[in-house]
Image (cartoon, rainbow, N blue to C red; front, side, top):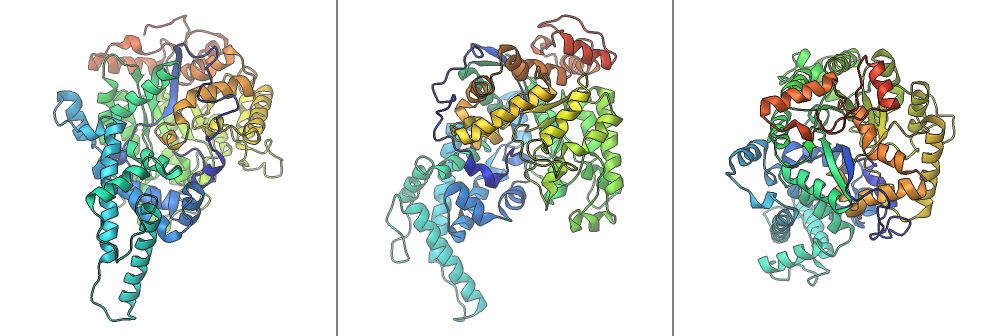
Length: 588
């Protein structure tokens, strides 16, 4: 999900978009309705996520003080705790339409939920919920209960009151006078005024409040917003490939509002909408869920492998999404694992995770389904779990399954050291270099990296841009001179938290052209053509036939599905997979 470690984002400020990526910066020769494939995005809403556990465990639980301080300027831990409480309220699963409600709306137009149709509407609803939360905190601060003075309960209540008071002073102060117990209870009008100000004038706090509002939207509304944002920046979306995620087993919180099977169904209906670009998602796969299912662990009733097969053969999904930082490696799994997981299974699942993943790789080869995997050292659900996405663990997979198509996401920071390369200086010791050496030795293989959530492109700071551009240029020169293995992705909706997101495509385009010096041909490959080789879009390929069968079953016009053009590398890919290439443009 988050490309960058949530706690490091303070280094990427878009306050000054001055170095080739300002708000008025043109897209140069790209743009003007330049075709675009967004090969890595997300359009899930709050009902699709184990939101509370993810925010607490992955984002805030271990480092709440540092996170709130560095990201939002909240230095007091009590204030930070209340702000997290507010965010969890805004991201509650009941705030977003579940899959059943959205399917009914798409099919019949019934049950319309206006607050989920657009960001302005969602924002208004979130402002109202924030106002209600402020009044609840104010009321809680004033509450009193019986208890012996000096008792544990009394001390705890006093601590809560102090925390509530400090939060209100911080949050309300810029709009109203500091409110204490001697003031009258906060009125509805006062709470709304404070809430509106927080959503408009509070810097990073405003950005995060508005970002959390996005998670209250219909999934199809998120798709439409992403398409519109690209068009506004001079790009025409040909294909979106939204990724679903499955974190439940690792975070120990089941998604009950819209479990993965229901997310799969609603994405099927979203893909059917006419007069729009093609939308074909990646189904989330969790090998631990599959291990638990095979071990007949208590409550494990769903096979991840069976779900993936259904998504790929029945519901129009294009590929599979893996998220190793939850706690597994692409190969060679070994602990530690959460003790609750080991207790539930009755064993350490080293071998079993490898077996489940190998079965997935075989399925993906069988169905010509690509794998998109989180490939940056961030957002681990446990100690050092973030490092489990290392390309070093993928190299045995590439060797064992030469026909597998894989893209490792979030390329381009060059600061994470790969296993076995710890003594090398950066960037030579980086994950990117480990992957690059494989690509150089195997240029015909369908192994790619995407530059999704490349938030550094939004920075106007030379100390951020120049080293990264130098590493990009050196990497392509050494490993991939024509940049035939790099793919563009937004990582929307996650990217929506970044200041300057509204100029993201322009900014990435500017970074590639002005900072890296890439020409039109290379930029076109990154924004479109390389994705057409990673994804099963080649005429006559098994994966394309699989997608066309879905078009036939659903009576959707298949002409919108892009077709990979022939070329030297495309021909090599097809040759290595036993395919026959033909020249094509816009027909199935």
